[in-house]
Image: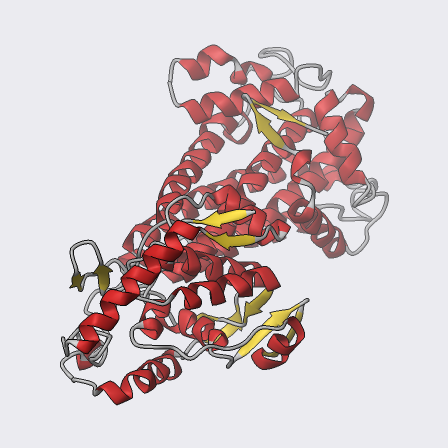
Length: 507
């Protein structure tokens, strides 16, 4: 059970809720704080105080005073007018994470909503009713207004949801699970949509999937080392110790552990003096990729426990303050930085693929084909990897350096953080396919060398992967193989590759 306090949610908690359907409850103490916070809003309304977003218009229309009898309609109109998302919907897991994160933000008790609204969000999470939320349309400042408006529609009983993988009307799903829509009161519509939860949820799912892929890429690279008789000396602890980057040292150690009993790796001078950079510099490059991952971990952990709407109500001091916590710049930078790590993970893997298939760079059969010439083998797999890597390079352009004014120049600088997060996830999916191609090629290479000579850990990984894709004995439609391995890498049990005290354990 995950208890929402507003400031103690962890990335592991999100993993449990989103991927393992862990139950969520609201902390009793926070329930009381939310109720007290709401009381302040109602007292200010009774006192006829003018407060942005509560009894005024929004954005450039903030100078427009709204009459008391129109406050509920104001919130309804806000959600309807702002639900302008377009394109394909976010994956259900991202949608579920978005609802969880919005509930956690409101649970801190600074947003002026009723406890019933927070509970409504939690009920959606626990019932596995996931709003259909279009991916495109957010500028990443004033929050993820368009995406979160589609989330808010569902709370109101409108829009569509995914339930058990089926897309249906919200009310149809509510009838199936016994939920009721709620009518938004003053401030509540704005509180639901002023936030960074679309970009942050996308970032969290990218982060969680990337951790496993980073470990899988190390195992795959280790197998490629065996397929190319790589030189293990480049992974010596002293080399990495004197540079001092912890992530680099960790990668080198894990590769050494994986290959410690391999008869396919070599020592410097035994076959060649030095390997190409794509082999020799695995710890330096992958270590730097891990650094972008750890930076993202830090910033996402902060953001999932952040209060990101506007205005904020501080019941202790009885004050309402308009600010800009909805601005997505921290996450925009984070995701753009993470994109660099994802891009380089694919870049160096593709170069290893080239070394596996190019007969001018190895002593293996040309393109790993059992019958070179008559059959092309893995030739075009490298093309596909190169195309994916090139696409990643275009997506790696930082979204965060762009800004387009909106709301009649009232909102004159925006983050584009949701674009950065979406691109990072797309790049991750591309990179997983590149790693899948490398794995297919590496398995073929070690078969030519002798599977019996492989290290224990890489052989275990090989045996698992061979259940997914057979050896290349003749040309076939390799697209199916690539997709099957890609799906296996994504869905394989996390226990297959776990980092524990500097080493990777294969189960």
